[in-house]
Image (cartoon, rainbow, N blue to C red):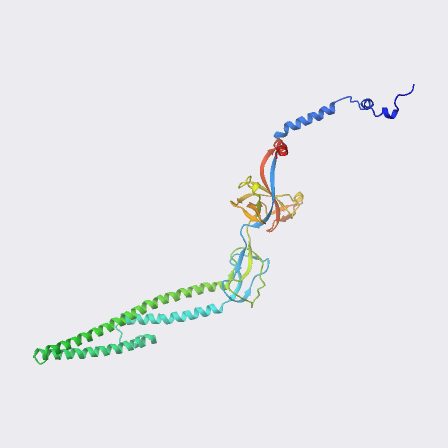
Length: 379
């Protein structure tokens, strides 16, 4: 009997396929379905930490300190070397400030002269001085001579008027002269007396005013001397902090510098922090003291591991970085180095970059899957 269909066609029919691949048992299928069900049932109990990542940089807690000369002068000696360590109070540069010392000497001489003036004025006002030898300054020796000469002249005139008055009074009492002549003599005497007293008071008032002016001037000069002496302390430029010398200018002994010249920068010796910028879309989930993980770019985290820390500060306002609004975040750093399994240590240094991974929350695997599915359907 001949075949109705060739063998090649029969091999590709459904009946032949079912016969060849007939399943004798459904155990594998059941195990697979059971596995899916078990996995789905434990998803709500499997939790994972969720992180968001941004780039950051390691910095010192304190900013760099600029070393500036407050005075002009010629450098006598410099102790600065690039990248050298300095301690607070160490002398960095010595400046020769001859101009400042000349000013102090000049003001000191002025103060000495005014001190002599004050001495003489106190004698003129509070002593019964009769001899110019008691005065030390030429100025008030000369003034006293003029005063004494004028006073003698007025006293002589007054004495003459007094004698004339006594004589006129006797003549008037004897009716030898008229009343008008007697009264003229009395008027001349009073005028001479008033002129004498006025001259004395006028000169005393002048000396008292001079004394006040000289004492005020002496105080000003004393303050100026103290100020210049304090400024002379700036001839020794010292380090304000512990740290490392950076960005040193090419200044050598013999160079002249002007006031306000930036000499170098001191990078402070302080604990390291991590500075980074977070987008506004992620900042709402960050809180102070939240944990962070730091993946240092200079060290492969698969070999060296990651550093840890926590959030210290979150700026309350945005900063514009490359025309992008971002929030500045400062994090602490728990380690000063990372280590390999063999114990070799790699130090963490200022300026190193890293990926800062902020801990957001612990979410179950079920929540993550449902969130993902929801994102598919949410426009």
